Image (cartoon, rainbow, N blue to C red; front, side, top):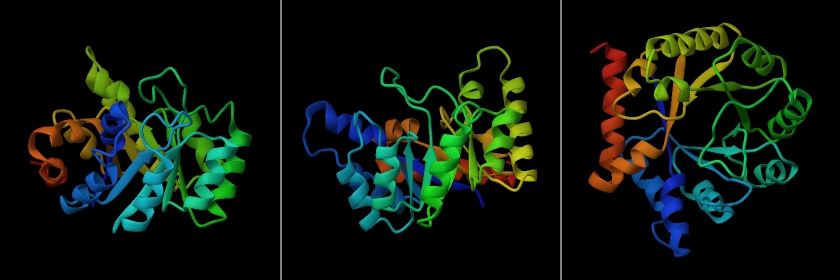
Length: 241
């Protein structure tokens, strides 16, 4: 089964634009669950531009599915994750000036730091994944330093204007390698209702995390319906239709 993790960060983005209580990403997450989401993903950024600690605490209390916390590899956030106890944690790169995560984690340059953080969180029972580009070396190192899973960055495929098939093949090869190494394989970034099916057909991928396109669709049809529509695309992909 292909799991859908719904990222509700951009519900919080709208809330933070006015510094009010609405819309509440927690309520959006509960509606996503009703629509069939298999988990909820939130990115607690260092600058707290959207998701707040309060959101993560309430999600931990109220979700029936799993909570996946995206985070930078910093002592503050690792300690927060130890306290908040999400089911999963995904280490991602983070720059203050970016609009959204722009590329995979540099596990080559920061191997020791990431390995220490993985061990720290795994000691509390949290499964750790690493957000990586679809390349051989970061996937191999992810396995060496003890990650439970890799989330393959699908942004290049999604943004491709010339040779999308080439970039799709890159994701296919990366997913196959990660699976052979014994890693659980996830994917995410830039996926939407138009481009998700080829990625969802990759047998080794067991989870896709999708946020912006679902939140955008939810503005028109509601969160529950938006999630149902994405899950239907997953079903079509896996059934080969």
